[in-house]
Length: 586
Image: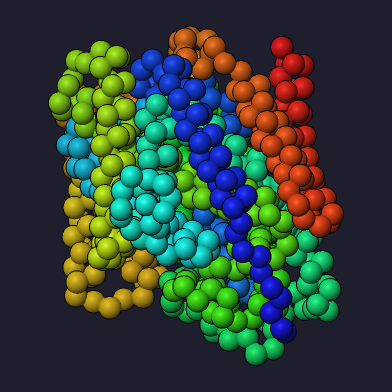
């Protein structure tokens, strides 16, 4: 099929992106006064509304990968590629069924806080120190990937600062500029606002992304129908080069691969920043609502985000001719759909939302790992008797330091490359021996204080030897790694004896897991008590929707203006609905 013309990004679109980034900074400054201690800063005083936690978990769980790599898989593999978008569904579903309630009943501020009680302080320190660098590299690689994709999609390669009116005669690569700008924005609202700002920015991004993502579906289907190919949506276009039954990791899709892919994601989704939302809500019932809402949103998201790249397969069967600067042109499939059907103004809003979706993944991880460093390393080993004010300052400074390091690594990667391979290597070696003890420690058995550390060293050693000495398919490697982790944990828990004091401590820990959270007795006053999140987010959405509707004044055809009114009207309507619900609740 002959390629249809794509729009280019206009000045209006750039202004929309800038306005959105400034809004995120304002949100961070707004919530600065609502954080009085690290419980407020890292978990919102456990007063976060469950619907905010659910939406924020969803945004943290999918990031911009849904719009780039995930869309690319669907574009290349067709309907079978939709399986790549389903990983979050099973991970959060298991969270709803098994993990959310137990994580909330641990009553922790960070994920590794319970490790010292359930296992021992040595386990907490070792697991924390190995967990931190991996997530630091994750932030850097996502930041770099976002910058590369954004600059390619916007069609810019370098930026002359002097030409912009700035007092520096310097030319930087566009990738470096995006890394610095995005990193500075994330650092600002994370530093001041903590989890409350992170969650609010996530919800605002969601309220913009979802209406536009839904709007794109009928528009791209209509465009496909105009080209006479609507009935061929789920078929392979003539002359299209199929990748041939490969998974996104490059090996054939077999039953073992599917099983291990699901097992791996079930573990990772219940030990990543999503679980932070479980202990950020008042009780275990709301924690399960967070997981259930996240699951439902993933199911909905898969259906919405899969249609545009399927349609683009027919409209643009050779994206290498469209995205000449992208190393993986298929990753431009979703943006191609946006540029094909959205008017100027909404293009900028969608770019800002995709950009913010990636930032949601980074800011959640940054707040998550800063909480681990502050609560599990700094307070346990460096400043054991620090007061609330000191710990809040430490939390902010650790956020600033970790975020700055992530930005510097991303800049170094943009110049030299290579760090992504280190992240993949660390994931292969260290993730399994960390996540298995974390989850099994919540269930089995009421003994085994040395099981976590034993499992970590045995499995990490095995993974390292296999990685160095053997070429092994992903599915086989993960099967052996997970099997060894489970066997080692259970065997060491049964065979290695605990001291009487540790047996008592573990017994008390499991008694705590069986005790429901009493909100009236356990939760004290929190900064968020002074604010209605429903009203605040409702006002944000209403203001954003109004601003989008005003873009109808941009000179363009009537049908394009109608699209703007529909998109902005839905966002405005959601904001007004939330404000009405807030008034009724009061």
